[in-house]
Amino acid sequence: MTDPEKSRTSGTTPQDRVLIFDTTLRDGEQSPGATMTHAEKLEIANLLDEMGVDIIEAGFPIASEGDFAAVSEIARQTQNAVICGLARAQFGDIDRCWEAVKHAKQPRIHTFIGTSPLHRAIPNLTMDEMADRIHETVTHARNLCGNVQWSPMDATRTELDYLYRVVEIAIKAGATTINIPDTVGYTAPRESADLISKLIANVPGADEVVFATHCHNDLGMATANSLAAVEAGARQIECTINGLGERAGNTALEEVVMALKVRNDIMPYRTGIDSTKIMNISRRVAAVSGFAVQFNKAIVGKNAFAHESGIHQDGMLKNAETFEIMRPEDVGLTETNIVMGKHSGRAALRSKLEQLGFELGDNQLKDVFVRFKELADRKKEIYEDDLLALMRTSTDPEEDRIKLVTMHAVCGTEGPNQARMTLDIEGTQKKTEQTGDGPVDAAFNCVKALVPHEARLQLYQVHAVTEGTDAQATVSVRLEEAGRIVTGQSADTDTVVASVRAYIHALNRLLVRRAKGGTDRREVSYKDIA
Ligand code: KIV
Ligand code: ZN
Image (cartoon, rainbow, N blue to C red; front, side, top):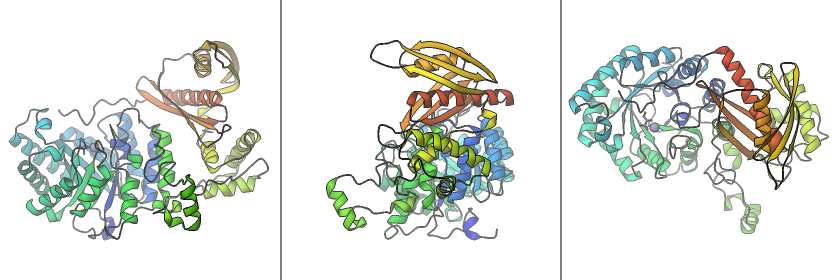
């Protein structure tokens, strides 16, 4: 181990350093409807690594072929972060997890079992039998990997004496991190702190491991509970981007990171996160998961740095600190001034895209410039968000077998609505005319008539990129067919056109996935405790 701060195991982390463990790709992605494609998972993992996340929980390898492939690939590609996979307290799960994470420069196995009375009842184990299972499985994981995390699921509803007992067993069996999950978001800040303090004070060997906190947000206290745990001695926070996760989600990464930064006077702890990367990854996670960020969400909501009332604006002009405790640029929010228009040239576009983090080759720039000009013809003012939406629209030649040629949809107060469409399907033009319940439905019926398929529409979501009636709409369409899940995206000033393009994008991706084989179907969930 060269850098003690990077060792991420017990004993060597400086006392003021809090490790950030991101589980967007595991706990976040497992929330119903938030499924990401393989390529999207790799992209998010890369962004997490670039922003300085210490540990990335990349997935649950036993759950499906897709999870296994994603964890393996993330393990291979990641440069800095520890790569962790989840495994239930079963040898088969742990072996599969190791197969996936072993390619990482720094692998970690995370194994867990539900220890509260309600959770013990599911596998029908006595307290002693469960204790034996914990000993065997943590020992097995440690024989495979030097970095093992163990979690007593539902720890905050587990009898305290039993929790002491099982945590001690896990430490003796070789766990290097002990994670204390508040699985159902039940605890409160003082109790969260108290539990960590008691564990550190009473469990033999506690000073040789890192204690982690993993909070769910059912009562809206996940961030407060995580910070309280840190004040009591936890040195790893488990969290997700945008607080993504089942039910009310997990602790939001951006909230704990910015709280520790802004209130370092009273919480003197450091993370390794480059906070200027927060906005970009927040937008990407929202786009690929299909879970939009609420406008007034702390740190990353659209209104988090907006000052609209007259009094606020006056104060802001005199001194930004009147109403701002952080600067927008601290989280990577650049001013949304009008950035470009019809007369902007290729060099200006390249430079603006570079500022937004996109390095384009000449051919890519040529393609984006054509689409930028088309947009500028329809929309006078092009904002940064418009450019980001443009960049999200796929230009992958592999995803180009079906193309929209023309479309006309009629809307109005009298239905049914009608749409006419011509598609280019692998070089042959085909036309149809269909009706539907609204112009989008009519247009989707045209696509279905021209490209017959059995895929099920899982998600259809529309967002306005900027303000104004000429704003672009970004549309996400998620389809599922035989266990394969794909998401298509597009943006256009015409919502119906954006919808059809997103649908066609998803179908193109489905064709690619069909050809490659494999499935995203999950055979097990982490709630299936055998
Ligand atoms: O919330 C929880 O208990 C979990 C465990 C699998 C760590 O996500
Ligand atoms: Zn969880």
